[in-house]
Amino acid sequence: MKLAAGMESDLQEAAAAVERQANVLAAPATALIRELSRHPPRVVVTCARGSSAHAATFAKHLIELRLGIPVAAAAPNIATVYHRALGLKGQLFLAISQSGRSDDLIETAAMARAAGAITAAIVNDAESPLAQVSQIVLPLGAETERSVAATKSFIASLAALLQLTACWTDDPAMQSAHGRLPNRLAQAGQLDWTPALAALTGTDSLITIGRGPTLAIAREAALKLKETCELHAEAFSAAEFRHGPIALISGALPILAFNPWDDAAASLTALVTDLRRKGARVLVAEPGNVRDDRLPVLPPDHPDADAICMIQSFYALLVKLAAQRGTDADRPRHLQKVTRTR
Image 1 (cartoon, rainbow, N blue to C red):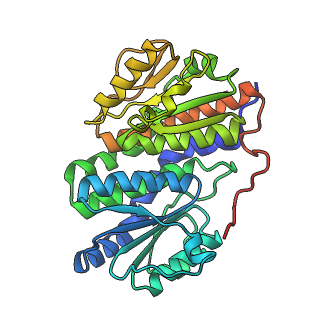
Image 2: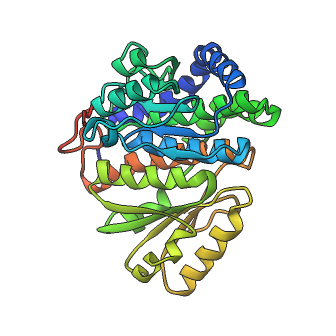
């Protein structure tokens, strides 16, 4: 069983990237918050693709819950294909990208800035075209990522959003949790999720479920299972799953659930209980005694930061799962590191 050396290295470097990021992000985050204090937005519009779109899902959760500001995802083809400007004057346009080189994000950010939006880019390449067209650049500080599939930069994106929200809300609890995140990420990467291998190695399809802060985690997990393991996976919120997809349930379809440690936990726990009653094989990442159907997580600290630690534990599992399935997680077929779309 040959492990993906690049992804394994990225996994080991994620904690250091988040620790490094705290310093490089502080000044531009403060500048952005100062601008938002002068011109409070009534809506935040995110723009992202791939894993970064899942980070945008995390941003939606954080900003709507902690600030009460609606967050909507932009459809970049409105700018790139239909050449239509949006009425974004005075609103926050937040682009998230690892490379900052996808044409649709660049053109949409340029449109938003021309329309009078406050434009900010969370990006790993601070010299990229996306950074250049944005008013404020929020650097990820993740440095080089060896694997084609983004892992370290995804964790860095979530950490940047946590730091930005903590600064924006001036929330001491969130700020403290962000400070503890590097050490907790290092611990999360060492947790043993190998009991999940038996259920996932031989399957052709599975479902991932999350809610609240873990919906973004479930979506990212499903994408990474496709990319690195050539395994079809589909992500749902615990609520949305009851609106039709629950008809898919059978003992042959594994479910991987990421249980948040906040007010959303009750609904996800109730769903898991119901699914098991219906005969589903459900693996749940949640606090509690380790069992065959429960994947270990760190002791609860802060629900938003805890969700970031969950994806770190999942990535450690992913390296082993790809090796078991005989796929090259570092170089997924048909993929390249920088994907450019319009």
